[in-house]
Length: 303
Length: 300
Image (cartoon, rainbow over all chains, first blue to last red; front, side):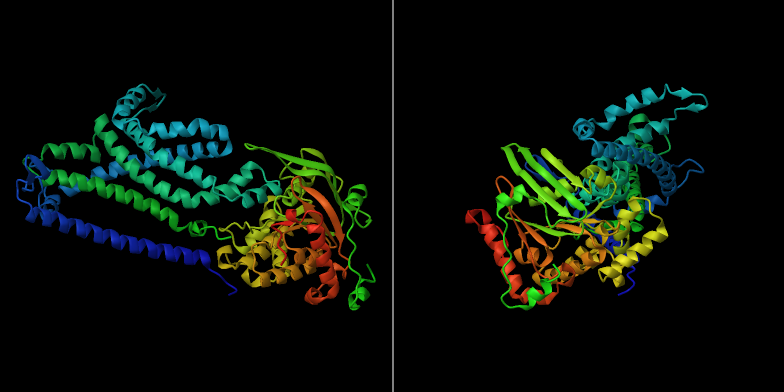
């Protein structure tokens, strides 16, 4: 009983948890593939209709290509032009581009959301002034915001620094990532019990010291899910922003370009959708890794 | 005090004499000591709520000598916790004055004159037991090596040396509370403020903790202000029991507990006639006059 390697144990158990949830995720993918093929086999090509109303959509090869067709398509060249990369290659390249932009947006959103949360935790006035705007901000559609950001950004040029288009995309992605972080972290910063807060007060600890030694560590269990959610929304934000700003090189561009090929090459748009989904999973997964080293901060309060 | 031992040995030990309330306010002094730990003079506390104003404390006078163990007892809402919080500078009195070792509570708090323990252990779940005990020292910039040495001493004092590297959630409620008490002793305070620290514990753990606290206080020589619901607990621990009544919160009586010197109190005392006599005296003081106000008191 004299040695208690609890942090190591916590890391081990959270690694086991991660492995188990990865297993369930794989099972869900398999289930989805089976469901897809069953619907395709059972429902007639023209879909199901009740009277005039369409209940299930068309299931012909143009609307719902076979899963194996989509997978096969991944390995084939993107276009018939000589030297064109495979669809998979193009997906990976676009995914890498979008992932980096989304990561920049995520970092920006996390820093901004974190600062907002600390401000709101420090001053009640800041909370009542800021929180409604934080919530309201998420009701403005990204598509409406994108041209504004591009318009403003285009005019920024300080010395050698010139505003790049990907920066607009990252900024828009950060706008989405900001929200869960601000709200989740505020809740976490306010989570210490009265006894804990008064203990620090009784020790004459400054607010800053209380923040570092009490409120920040206490916010970790709230912050990690918020960071994961922020990663997923940053990817979605980046893709939507790429589409609405017309940025080339990312998954957003891929989605548009492949969708235009849908009628002649039905498997292609599904490849782009797959790329977007996988990208979101990869981003959220990377953030989950952050939590592995923080096991000791993730115990629920017992006393 | 010196002949308390002999008084204990006799079956017909005289029951402690309860001091009437009027005498208390006129002569608030405890046993005349060389130094005063806490001096409360004419303190009132009024809380303003949506429903109106509540007088939590009304013209309270109390003086606690250095090294003295004093319990505050009374039904819910009698202001005993409020009084403790005022001394700790976690709240400010509406009127009146409080001095802690001759200084204002704020200065005393900033100078770390007191250690404090609440009903909830309030341990930080991400810190080991040792790191929790070190927290007050860390907050005041004590060096790593000195902190570790002090934490080891304190954990030995509360019998948790083997659990230094455990985390709070691996400990039972009683053990967590012992960690909290060790933490409150970290700065070697000459005053301990305890707000029902054993309130959430089962009866057996509670009695063991009381015996331990008596020993700890003897070793550290700290004055203690101890808020409790339990009459036997107050009697077992204290040199004086301050009985309070609610609406408005007032001190009704101060019952001196004339048992063995607190350092020599052991579990045997719990079955002693003098102990029962003191329990009866406190109970009568609580129920005295208006028995209805004593509702909610734990008579275990």
